[in-house]
Length: 69
Image (cartoon, rainbow, N blue to C red; front, side, top):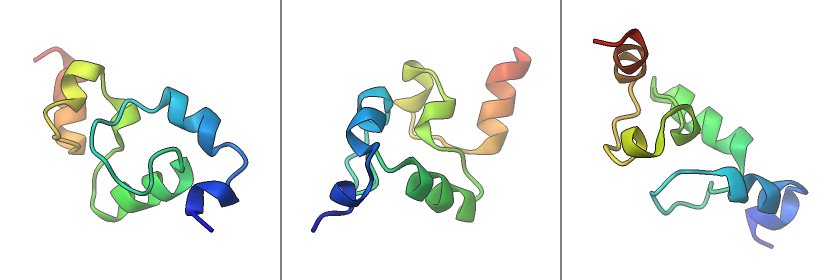
């Protein structure tokens, strides 16, 4: 059984996921959040489509983009 089969919202979540990186957490928001939190990062959904394409998931990048610098 695939991980996405175990989450009742995986297909719905996947339609809102703007991540362009292929991984087995696509649509599994709780796993994605845990994965990135362990690395001091934010998941793709915190970023615009343009920002997400940079693959820079750092908190610093997020704050920099929101502060208008």
